[in-house]
Image (cartoon, rainbow, N blue to C red):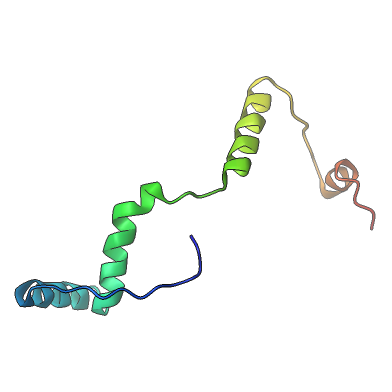
Length: 87
């Protein structure tokens, strides 16, 4: 999720605001934190965890794994050799 924040002003009926404040305080939240929590809970399935390119690479890697096209690495030395890392 982007780190840039925006500020929104919302208007709630007095009774709803009071109920929300009470519920928020039960969880130890301020009203703004509680509303943020509700929004995140509602949209979390829509929040991309990785970008499209990474998702494609993951899909390709899984297909390769299913076909048995992978390398077993037993220790750091083997990993360094595979990645061509020189110490």
